[in-house]
Image (cartoon, rainbow, N blue to C red; front, side):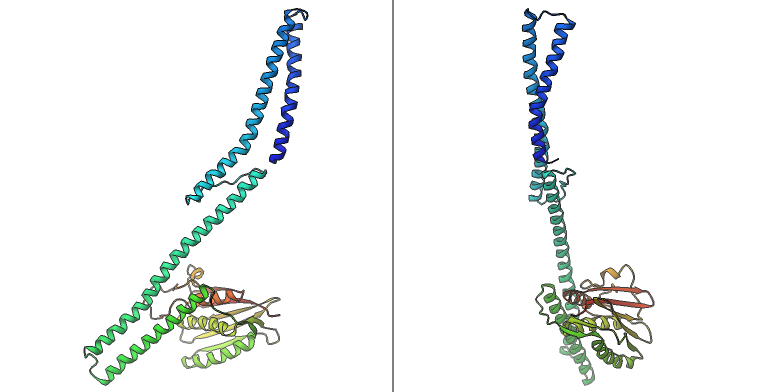
Length: 361
């Protein structure tokens, strides 16, 4: 019941209840004095009757007014008091005090609105804590991934300075290792820079109409040429009669596909490497599946492979290397396109990475 209705009924009650009470008191009191006790209405009994009736009327007025006022005030003040306590606790940083209400009046709605705000603040606080934790992990990962090659470079430079590389062949080998390591560091820094620009949404996107069939046909031709040297194959599976036009940034999309393929090739454990790209045209969107025949990913790892610096190989010195940012960058780029990306995998058989884009108009 709304507060307005409650106040109206309270005011009506303050009039109706005393009137009914007065009538009942007069009837009952008159019956007791003049019928049961056989009092004389023309004597002092009448004065007694009038005195008792007056006192009863006063009591009825006081009790009725007091009870109705108490009930209405309690129904209004208690929720306000609870909201006041909650506001104070929130101001102190305590977001655990619930003010959810089952009442359907204005204060109930206000309490539930306040509760919704509290829950959103709690979620925001948890997100902030998670962000801070991720930031610390990011800094730790960056420090590790930069320190490892730097330590290697320092070791080889020190070897050259100390004369350990005392032959032209050894000196050339040391210099090649240093050059390769600095290139890896340069690639890592480029990925960190790209990731940070995507994270703060400072990377410009230039959308155009892209035919995914033609796009992947060119990509697969180049990929097939490269992995055939390692006795591998790459194929494109699609219905040529379907339309695969999307609105996309061609260069960013190429970065997504390259990151996924590089990640697949990195974890290939078969003698014959196989990459399949399948295009599926639906009513309003295109689904791309990029499948490999690698060693697969554990089910418990799948939800996290698109997180920054996440590696299914827990060894930070894994021979597979990499920054751990490839799939995270791919996810951010696809999301900037208004699409979604996900994965499915089976241990020993391989992994499929899917992404979905809206069809171009």
